[in-house]
Structures are given as structure tokens and as C-alpha cells.
Amino acid sequence: MPTVRNLQAGGGPFFEYPYALAGVTRDASGAPLGNCIVVVYRSADDSVAARGLSDGSGNYRLDASSELFHYIVAYLEGSPDVAGTTSNELVGA
Image (cartoon, rainbow, N blue to C red; front, side):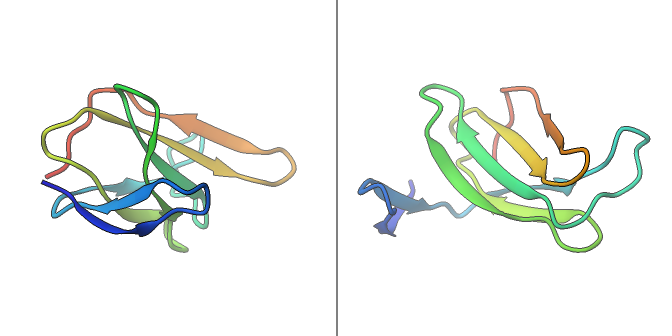
């Protein structure tokens, strides 16, 4: 069960889960792409579960529930901007 950590800027609770989703952000050719904004959403209602940045090597680890489905959206501003999303059936481990 998640623990309420504090309130988000929008006023809703921000939950801390004992599980996480981890991976590497990559470009279209499969090379690691660092410093991307990474947002974990709950699939059931599209609410934000966690957000952060991938490190310089593209690695990220963000809190997620082991009992709910999630999806991840990654974005890197640039010329051109780069964005991608995962399937919507990810669970924290």
C-alpha cells in the first residue's frame, strides 16, 4: 500500500511506493539517451504516479505500485524534440 509523502503542486497527494519501474531511455537507433524527463502514469486514470529525469546514461528508477498498471512517457527537448511511451501494463517490482 502506498504512503502519502506530501502534496503535489496541484494539491493532490503524492504517494511513495515500496516498488519501482526502472529502465533506460533510448533514441530511435537504440542508443542510450540521457537527461530525459520521465513520467510514470497510472493506467486506470492517467494520474501521475512519479516523475524524474534519466541520468546522463539514460538510466531511471521511479516509484510505482506492484498492484496497478502503469505506463511511462519520456521526453527530451531539443532540435528535434524526442519523445516515447511504453505499453500501459507495467507494474512495479
